[in-house]
Length: 111
Image (tube, rainbow, N blue to C red; front, top):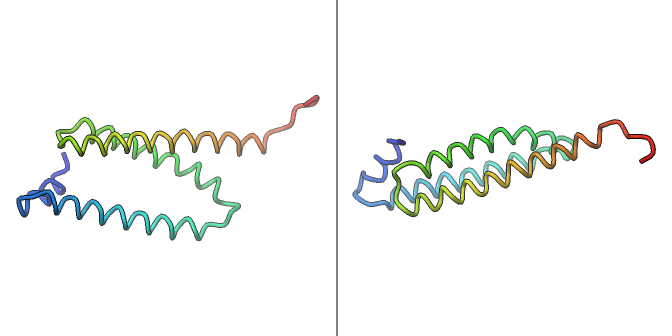
């Protein structure tokens, strides 16, 4: 159980603070992600994306843990959406990595 978030949500007796903290973390993550990705040269983008696949796997495990925890109904819905998006990201990363590795593989004769 994440006691810091529970303590933040119960500090003023409502879930407003919990939502504000969650939205603030989301906005900071979006800004930081955009700034980092925009500074990566195109030649390094695909290898870094395949490396980020492991991070998405960690996100997937965390989302599964959140859905299984004792959170309110809307928390479980957000957790389910996180599972869906993280799964799409992991599968997409594997597809891109497979295509990238296929570009560097030896070509078969007769093809």
